[in-house]
Image (cartoon, rainbow, N blue to C red; front, side):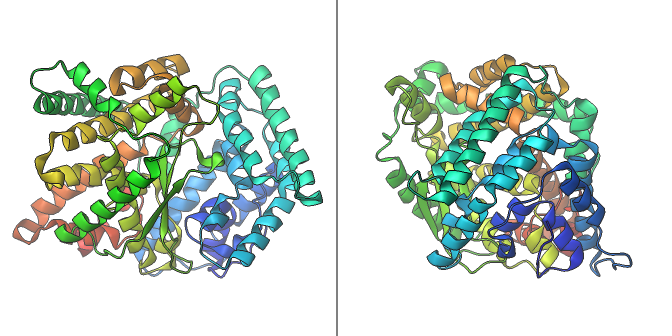
Length: 512
C-alpha cells in the first residue's frame, strides 16, 4: 500500500511496513480503514521504499537517526531475510484486527466508518495471506487458529453484504490454516542464528544466545530464592507449595474480576504519584474485557497513542472462555488472576508501568520517538516497574508483594527460556508446557497458553531482556552520576527517549 501519511517519507515507509503498530500503538490514523499489503510483492515493494527517496537526509539528532536505522533494519530482517510473513500467520491476523477502533480516539461515527472500510478490505487481505503463507509449520498454524477464529467476533451475520463477504474471506483463511495444521512442516523453530538476528536487529545490538541463556538461568535461580523466602514469610509453618495453593485459591470469580481490577488501578496510580517515580502522573484507565482476537495475552494496556487525541487508556483482561468447564475456568483464575498476583499486574500495566509510560510517549520530543517503539523496552520497562515497586515498599512490605514479583518474574524468565528453546529446537511444545508447570506452577490451559505464545512470538522473552537492560543501565547511571543520582532523574532521562531500542539506551546517561 502507499500511505497518505503526514510523517516524513522515511518514517512513512517504516509505517507502511508496520501498519498495525503505526495505527494502534503510535496512533497514526491516516491508516484507519486500510490493511497492509502482506503479499510477497507488496512486502518487496515496502522493503524497497525503506530509507526514503534518494537523497533523504539523516535526522539531525544522532540518537533519532540510530533509532530509525534500527527500525529499518528490523523490518529488513523480519520480512526480507527471514520472510516471517510467509511462515507466521500472526502478522496476517493482526492485519485483520478491528479492536483498535474500540478506543475513543475519535467520534464513534468516524471510527465505525473506518471499521467498515477495513472490513471491506478483508477479502483482499485474506487473498494476500493465502498467497504469502506457504511455509506455515503445523504447530504454528495450530497455535494461531484460536486467534484466527476469534476474528469472527468482528462479524455480524445480520450485517449485510459487507459482513457476508468478510465472513467468506475469514472462512478461507481458517481453511488455509487448518490445512497447514494438518500438512505443514513439523518444526516451527526459527533456528538459533535467525532468532539472534531477529532479536538483535530491532534492538540495535548483537545477541549472544549462549550468554543470554546463562543470564536467564541465573535470573531463574534468583527469583526462585526470592519466591521461597517470601512464601516462608507469608506462612512460616506451611510447606511453600501449600502456601502457593492457598494464595491461588484466593481469587475473584469471573463476574467480579473487572471490578476488583478497577480498585487496584486507583491504588497503583495514587501510590506512584505519592512516590513521584515517573515524569507524568495524569493517568486515566478504564478496565474492560479483552477482545477475542487479542486473547493470546492474560491482560494488556491499550493506551491513548502518541499521535492521537488524548483519552483514557483501557486495561483489558482475558476472562475465562465461555466454552471452558468450571474446573478449567477456576484454573485460569487461580493461576492467572489470584489476589496475590493482581496488584502486581496493575503495577505492570498501569502505574508506574505501561500507562505511566504512555503519558511520557505522548510528550516525546520528536516524531521518531513518538512513532517508533521498541517492544523490548516497552515490556522491559513495565516488568522493571514490578521490581521497582517491591524496592520502594509497595503495600508496606506485605510479603505477598514479593511473592507476586517473584512469580511473575519466573513467568517472564521462563518465557525467555522457552522462546530460546522452542526456536533453537532444544524444546518441544510439550517441554515448554512442562517448564511453565514446573517453574511457574501453571496448570491446564494456562500452561499450554503460555507455551504456545512462544511459538507465535519468538521475541516474547523481551520482558526479561528489557528489564535486565534497564537494571544494568541504572547501575551505570548510579556509578556515573554519583550523588546526583535519583530514581526520578534516571527515569526522566530514560523516558525522554520514548521507547528506545535497548542498544541505544546509553543516550540517557549522556543527556540525563
